Image (cartoon, rainbow, N blue to C red):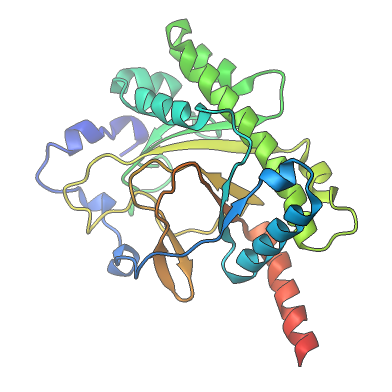
Length: 282
């Protein structure tokens, strides 16, 4: 099976999910409740209020010492942009299979459309479709250029909205990098902002089609984020879970909030800080 073979519209008409999409029981076990994540208001930090910045940094540090996940509100996105990005995501995944395959991800490349990640795996396939786009601070507008070149000018809005969303997300990530630096007590609070300023990111849309055997399948399997930071925009469908305090717990969508998950790159630093703190208290 490869990505061009996976057609979820056809799979949904079948009475059972194909065995390739089955996951071990330990992975599909239901969550053990809701995770109470801190909600961090970024308005004071973005407006240069030092007292509120320190409070936000303290909350970030506490979350990262525990599990590395928190919510941010008043994050500076233009009004309506997040909602428009979700709308355009639905538009893209609602296209015909043939039209989506025009943006097919060529093996060895990052950017493009795929279904079930079947170009990478043969079993434990995720029950999802994805659109992945590599991006960095432009110009050129690599996201818009890629999608328009694949889908055609009549689908230009898809590339334009996703490009604007990626630009806004890149700005937010730079702000978060500075806040992480403050939370770690760096003398140069802008160190991580400057370090990652010329870096690249990955924009990924995940679509999870209806599934007749949800107790057997997963939209995305258990994983760590190996990168520095992940910022997630949820729609109103519950599904995201975080492993915290020894169990999987649900992160319920909150209007206007973005989920921030600190990846392995930074979690190592916070774990070392945590050990140092415990050692100093002994």
